[in-house]
Structure formats: C-alpha cells, structure tokens
Image (cartoon, rainbow, N blue to C red; front, side):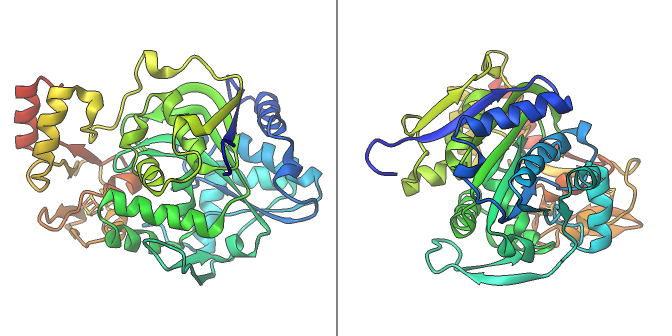
Length: 395
Ligand code: SF4
Ligand code: SF4
C-alpha cells in the first residue's frame, strides 16, 4: 500500500438469511468496491473457499451460510467463470470424497452447486508448494483446487474461537491444508502467535483475490463450533484479510490486539493492520459493542478488567496449572474417536470408548472440543483457575 492509500472494506446490511436479501447484500458489498471485475477476470477458474468445518446445518452458525455461497457463485457464474466450491473439513474428519459429499450436503452446499452450476470439489489430492518468502513456513501442503484456480474467493464466517479468540478471513485459509495436516500444523505451532505467523504466511502464499465475510449471524461464546449465534446483520467484503478481520472485530467487540493474526499482522507492518489504514464504506450497523459480545471462556485478556487481567496474565504464565483443559461428559459421548484422531499431540486415548486425557501432554489447542459432534467435550477451568476467579471476582 503506497503512501496514505487505505485498504477499503465495504459493509452491506443484511438482517437475515433470506435468499433475496443475502443476494442483494453481497452484490451491494462487491459493487461498493468497484464490482466483481475489480477482483476476478471473466471466464476464469474461481475457487470459493467457505468455512466447511464439520459440515453442520446452517442454523448452527458454524459454517459459511449457503445463501452467501450461492450469491457469490451466481455473481461469478454471470461472468462466465468456472466456479468450484472446495474446503478440507476441520481436522479429525478425513479428507475423502465420501466425507466431502456428506459435509457438503449437511452445510447446504450441494443444493447451491445444483442450483448455480458450481462444481463441488471431490479431488482430494494436494501438492507441496514452496514459499521461500515465508517467515514461519517455507512450504505448505495445499489442496489441488486451490492451486488450480485462477482466483480464490474466501467466504468466511465471523466467529469467536477458543484458541485464537476470533476466526474470520485470514484463518479461513487454514482449510486449504488437507485433512490431518491441520492437526500436524497445530502440533508444530503450539504458540498462538507462531500459529498466526504460519496463517499469515499461508495467506501471503495464496493471495486470495477477494474476501467476503458472513457476519449476518456471528458466533459468540465458545466458538468456532460450540458458541451461540448472534445477529450482527452485515456482509463485509474487501481484498485484504487483515483489514477485513480488523473491521469485523471492531464491529463485533472483539479486542483486535488480542487476536493473534491481527497482532502478527501489525508486527509485520502489513497493510490494513491498524484502523487508520482501513477505509470503511457502506452501512456499518450499530455495533454489538454496547451489549458486549460473549467472548470464549478461555479468554483472559484486558476485556476482563485491568486488575484481573494483570493477575490473570501473570498466572497464565503458569500455563500448565492455570489454562483450562478439555473435560469429557461420558453420558453424551458417541464413542466416535474423532477427538483422539484430531489431537495433534496424542493426549487422548479411548478407554472403553470414552476419551481419557493425559494432562501433561495436552497443549490446550481445543481442537477436540471443536470437532466433537456430540457436545461431550467442555472447556472447564481447573480448581486453581476457579479459585483465582473467585478471588478476583471473575464470574
Ligand atoms: S486433548 Fe488437548 S492437545 Fe489434544 S486436541 Fe484436546 S485440547 Fe488439543
Ligand atoms: S468425546 Fe466427542 S469426539 Fe470424542 S469420542 Fe466422544 S463423541 Fe467422539
């Protein structure tokens, strides 16, 4: 970004997932940036990269809503583009055609493809791509459709996240790592700031042409899969993932400085990493900040109050004693074993079908919580944290 040029993010109001309303909002958001041809070429191969995660029904607010995917697919189709919808599901679910078929259908993408002429990706191949300029990572395994496309359009979902506090545009790209490569990368980058550096490298390597953020319903609480949907009522668009995420966090009331990818972007001096580098056009809503979004139960930052925060951040350094661990509700467990499969450090084993945790091994990435289909994993503070919470008045 040269001189005082700003990263432009557009915001279009959208009060529901009504098809017509979403279609209008998405077009409005893109048109406010100069139209779709400012980002992709007519007749090109376009990859739509939604947040598929576990392929849960749209009302759960875990995946990018199919109406958003539909709207972008139609816009690209009108331009004569060959549109493919692809993502590798959240770790623990193997990247196989059978699993993709099931998840696409559950997330509502099968119907989108049928109605709009987009293709659903079933090619589970991937290639290793070298990235000499990467600061944390010099090569990535990337799913084939992301490498074969002329343009990538990221269709992300605005959610809280137990481990990274927020998940939106930049983190969405993690899904182009095939299947179980994701937990392996979690194991490699156990520090959230290192993980964020890896995510920025991946974004730098693939350079999506356009970002659309589904923030009609955002997720609060213990996202990215077990939080609560909440209406924000907007679609955001822009070229720059950092500027998009910064804008979304400020609207939602998530402290940007506490989001590792935004923090890392600022340290790197990336465009769009500070509010004065972002120009917002369109109709921003009344922010949620007044009510205060419910942050994940793992959050310990300044939003909890200065005194408490200082105390808690000091205690956090004791990590192993203080940070919450996953805990298991045997009555709800479906004995599927996904949590053991996703755990990047093999901290879980099944004992008579129910997972058992080796605390000394757990790195508290919360991938098991994210993947559990039965809600049988909860993040509970340990006795020490509960004691501190009582002393500091943190409820
Ligand atoms: S057991 Fe610990 S390390 Fe393993 S997935 Fe769960 S939170 Fe992550
Ligand atoms: S805790 Fe959840 S993910 Fe793990 S085996 Fe039980 S149902 Fe499956």
